[in-house]
Image 1 (cartoon, rainbow, N blue to C red):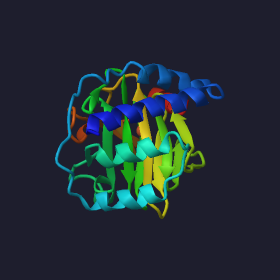
Image 2 (cartoon, protein in one colour):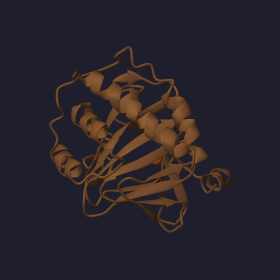
Image 3 (cartoon, protein in one colour):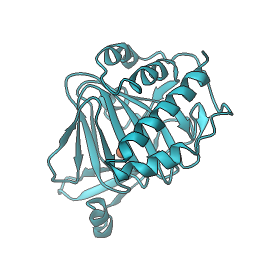
Image 4 (cartoon, protein in one colour):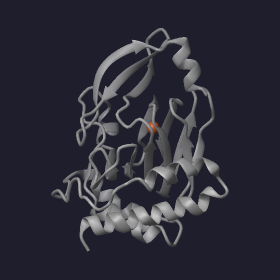
Length: 242
Ligand SMILES: [Fe+2]
């Protein structure tokens, strides 16, 4: 099977899986609706030469430990093996543990195997110990864990919650959130719906304890790049906490 065949079968399996889960969780209905808009008859990109990167060595380990729905997991594992991987961030100003420890492979979206105008979906591979600090984006996001355990925090002061293999979380648009990987690599499905061209705002505290944010943007298929930095307004702070 070609990369596109595998990606097509996987997207169908993911859509079916989320459709079955949406009966119990109506918040998934929006993702199902958007996944059904993906035109898998036209290949947008790929296959590319396999990414040579140390973190790629963790993919097999993560797949061996993967757990999930028996109708989804085999096609997800096959797609994770054949899709084109790349770094999410590649910027010298960031902690190398983060830039080198986070890879993504997109099945559909702005640069994936298939085009997605209002939905982007694929996989994240995160190295052990990675902490992806507080950030916001206008897209609504699902993280669906297949392997490893990811601790997700919503809000500045909230306690993190663990997402384990076979389980997922939904992050509402503009909600501030962070991710922390435990001692095993994490492989998860991600999906963004809504405004795909939105920036990612990375949050941090200045020396006085005030909150600032950096605006990161990207061109399709390229890593995110920082553009500007600003103090977080009270309004943005309120929205970020939902
Ligand atoms: Fe996010």
